[in-house]
Image (cartoon, rainbow, N blue to C red):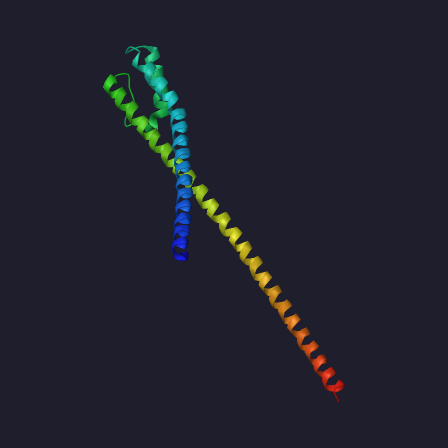
Length: 171
C-alpha cells in the first residue's frame, strides 16, 4: 500500500510541477505575442496611413510626390525598390507588403532578443545567488568544523580531568 501511495504522490508532484511549468510557458508565450502585436501595430500605423493616402492620389500631383518622398524616406530600408512617380498600384501594393513583412520580421527578432537577454539576466542572477549560497555554506561548514574541534578538545580535556579525578580519588 505504501508503494502505491508513493507512486501516486510522486505522480501528483510531477503532474503539478509540469502543470505549473506549462502555465508559466503559456503566460510567457501570451506576453510575447502581445508585445509583438503591440510593437507591430505601432510601427505599421504610419505605414498604413501613408500607403492608404498614396492609393487615393493621382499621378503627377504634388501630394503624390510628397507622399512618395515620405514613404521612401521613412520606410525605404524596408522596400525592395524605392517608389517613384511612375509606380503602379501593383508595385505600391507589393512595396507595402514587403515593408510590412520586413517590419514584422524586425519586430519578432527584436522581441526574441529582448526575451533572450531577460532569460540570460535571470540566469546570471540565479548563478550569483547560487555562488552566495555556496559561500555561506562553506563558511557555515568551516564554523561548524571549528566548533566541533573546539568541543572535541574540551571533551578530551574534561575526560582527562575526570579520569585524573577518578584515578586520584580512588587511590
